[in-house]
Image 1 (cartoon, helix red, strand yellow):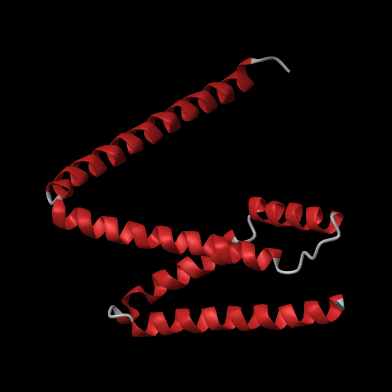
Image 2 (cartoon, rainbow, N blue to C red):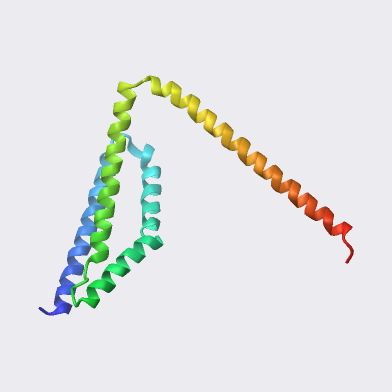
Length: 154
């Protein structure tokens, strides 16, 4: 089989799939009942996902797979496409699980709302106090270091 023809055919197929996925995403966005309320959040999630695609661990995983396939004289066309398709499928399924579990917890365990508010406020308060104490320690150390410059002979 001619590798250029096979590659060109796959690139067209990959492009069509990417375009279709984007069209489906836009259709879901426009048909949502919340309207433009969550469009900014959706755009932020999309752009953060694009940035996440170029994280080093993803690039290394794809690169290692391609190198191994090339070393074995196997076709490596589409490794990145199928990696991203699998990764986005897992993210999508985990999002659905999170939505359904959250809805179930809201209806089945309303007492979690009150407890969650207390826990959230407590964790935030402790975190802010911890950050304040750490900043105070850094400020004291900087002050001591600054003072030692003037006391030491040159």
